[in-house]
Length: 373
Figure (cartoon, rainbow, N blue to C red):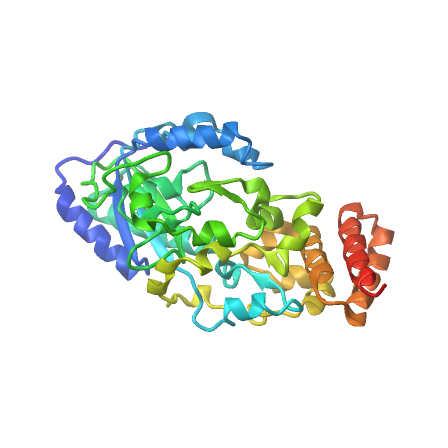
């Protein structure tokens, strides 16, 4: 990082940054220090329990995740922002989940890849700061490095970590993305930081109260305790992060969720205060808000890549996409059409020798054909 600029009125600078942030489309901005010692303890306990599954990136960077100054030299503050993402024009989630012949895609993934959108905005925000004060040390992150983004956002006053481990804002619910700027500028920290923290945070417990809706509704019982998620059971992990075979024990519970899962947010009472996004990049790409499973399963890889261009969905790859849809088709009501598309895809994949996808197709066919016996 370059040397920190001198003779700066940091209170005035922060006011400018907040104004620029709003102009760039962020709904809120906060500043925190870099002391994550209490969250580090929680992270280490979570890793020791093996709850991260195959997400080896969660521990391979050592203490850099909980020590921002180790990841980016001279960091003393973190600017955190949030941006709403719930599309205003998509089919209602409950309606899609209730239709087993349609595929449910987590609402954050219906539009353009948020990594790209937010990273560009944060870079522009950093450039505005640079234009005002000269060169300073910074680095931009959007879910792309060893960063404890929810812990930092909580410290900066953007919300609290709920029992489902997502960040909740009292006035905006939880349907938003997070991004950060690590910087060497000693900006004033936000005054509305949580006053106390437990293994995740006592403040979160105070706001969530006795509510256990997210724990009760989880299809795979992945929220094993308040503020504690076993990712190995989580549908978002199983359909996005897991690259191999989905354990048979979870396939029925997955239902028609083919990319992620929003159940713990859909039931959260605080989301009655959420706002639809006004960012066109996050508007739904139809018909992905309520797609027919059989139509999606007929996509070849070229079609998949074309229809998911610029989308976060593309990150899982074509094979995982087919795997997920095969499970959903197995969970759908018995249908000659579904059996036909499964058998068609199986014939094509046998020649390619894709054992992982074939195994899920065979499971789906057994579920479909078993219903006919």
